[in-house]
Length: 141
Image (tube, rainbow, N blue to C red; front, side, top):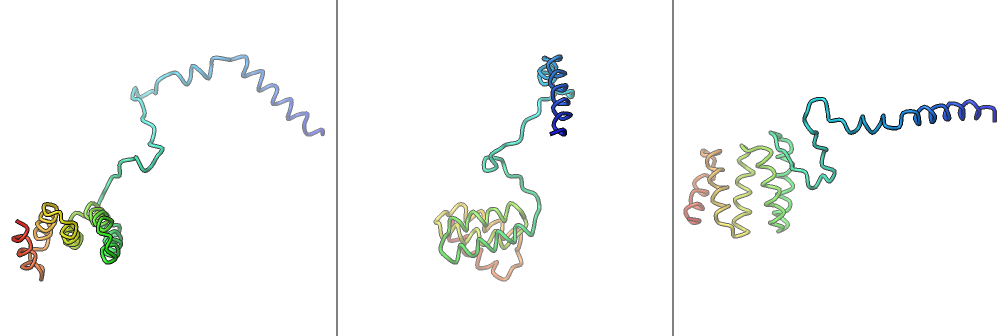
């Protein structure tokens, strides 16, 4: 019981001190930031935030593996999304562009398939299957 008396005394002094300066907190909050810029609060809903991509070959490899799984199970829309993610993480990843082209063919999107195959040939012009991909491009045109 005797421990509560000093605690109550300190709390009451703090309360009285806060009441002596009623507008202090409001004035501090209403003043603009010292830099003159208004700070934009971070987006609370992470699903709405814009995703920023930088070079990350490990993430690109992971996306490619997951995309291959979806492709094998026949989920071509999901595979397409994963291959696109892989190309965003590593723009020079030729395998991702090839798999994206194949997926776009399955989805019957000829223009996207042409773009993906063209990018693949630009990155891997000396690949073993380059002649086969060129034939596919001729068929798509």
